[in-house]
Length: 276
Picture (cartoon, rainbow, N blue to C red):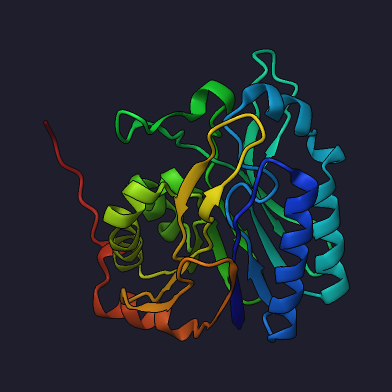
């Protein structure tokens, strides 16, 4: 299976972002990819809650989701929409940060709502409270496809290894980790954590990312790290998307999953213990 990681620099304008995304998806298809992955926040990246409330839509009404489903069906590909910001109708008004796996007929094969919210103080000027606008999910997801079992996660989930262990023990072979990773934490932690998750689970890790500076009409904007990565089950970096928007290809040999797990079968070595 040839996979393609789409790296984007989105703004707070969903229509403009969709045009950029469709262009790269078509480039990925032209390059022979049968599995195309986009980053977290494919439809919008904004820190302005008022703007988000006016720009976001319910899942059934979201133009980005509809267009990408149609594109997947037209091309006959599997498509991971890394995540979309969506209205939910929840009483507290919070949104969903939802990842979608789209089948080659355009159907939604799986949904995953990001479980772990990015509530951090990166620096005095880089403060994030994702949970103020987005409500966390509560269900881990492994999706069946003809080429692999896919364990779905999003961005900050990366820092919670027990989630990925559960996915791997539920027979996931490929872990998807779309992200809009902060440029400061990305420089320090992005690659090493992705490699660790691959090594711990014996899975391929596919991590399409946002990159560069993301302008906002009514905000200061933000920067993301880029470097979309594909990691092998033994921990090698197979592909790095660098820092420019574009498409990065990687060929997956799923026999490498069984090979890595056969050499170090740690997924079967759990033991109960007490304390602390």
